[in-house]
Amino acid sequence: MRYFNNRSQLARMDFHTRLIMTYFLVFMLAASALSIFMSHENTGLSAEGSAAYYLGDEEQMMFAKEKAELVETAHFHLFIMPIVFLTTGHLFLLSAWSSRWKTFVISSCFVYITLEIAEPWLVRYIGAAWGVLAPINAALLGMTMLLCILVPIYEMWFLKAQRRG
Image 1 (cartoon, one colour):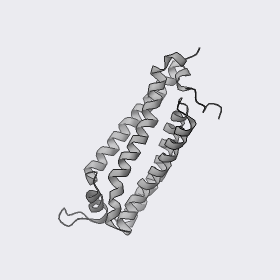
Image 2 (cartoon, rainbow, N blue to C red):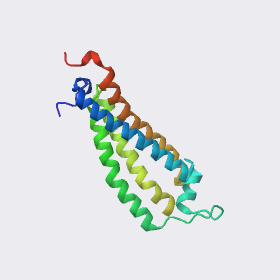
Image 3 (tube, rainbow, N blue to C red):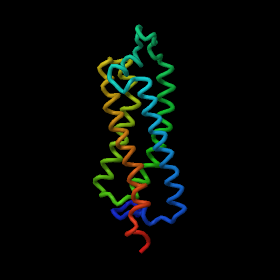
Image 4 (cartoon, rainbow, N blue to C red):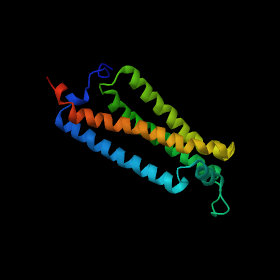
């Protein structure tokens, strides 16, 4: 844990380590963009669209999501989202940001992932009003993901003053 201090460890990495980490983060950025696009296609990134997507909409000939579909989606998200945030979060923890901000960003990741997994269940089985979580949580989760991606990229390539010296 000595690596997770207030000095950027990212700026001190050798070229090849920075290169592979950057490639990984660029793929995570593309995956995040694709996720936002998919959400937009499915729900329009709106509370009403989210409610229609999970509860069904006769006018659009959409069926309500069945329990098996929700379980399958939750299962996938419970595996992949923590792994993505474990990796991007660890890179973020190597940044020069203060311990307080690191705690806030990492804790926010946990909260937003939890809400992302819970939202379909809340909309489907509690009520359409929970659809409001979709656009709000998507924005917050997206911003957190951007921090965990862009801060390490910036510090790896643009904090030259702290590099090996």
